[in-house]
Image (cartoon, rainbow over all chains, first blue to last red; front, side, top):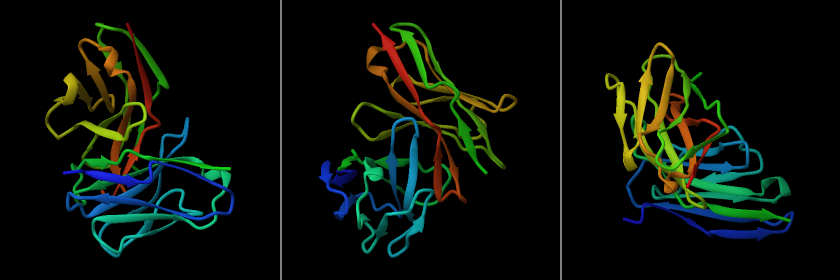
Length: 114
Length: 113
């Protein structure tokens, strides 16, 4: 099992450009998440999904869109990148809604917006 | 709302000494608590979780956590620190009807050789 994978690992964008980050999991998990991690701010939830075809906003959703067309994939899109979106992005998945289900994280995508 | 707090930004400990990384919680209902570790340039990894009734929880890499209901704490401990334990440690609690997870701000553990 590969677990949770993220593509790409690194990316540099210019302000205004768009891109899509791909997260894939092979554990048949229902729930998937996108976080951003910035120094001194911990992990902040951008969007999440509790099943194929569903998405929901987290605490910092502005400037991002997501889609979960297939159960194993969760895409994060930046339509018009801004320097404030420079961050490390992590995808995570969880079996389902049980309180004792732990999250499994991908290796992260380091994004720089110039 | 479910929340956790990590009062220390950084903890320094000498190799071989016991270590403690602190976490306090505020939850309604049964507490479900987690610890995760993040090594440099990696994603978070699950370390251990609290299951109701076990006040001392054992996890990966020799770590354990002590649940204290009266002090609303869930401190992470290890009897003898290794340099390789140097990492960022996050306390976490399920939230949003268990659909989401709320993480603490993280504590950087530095083990000094």
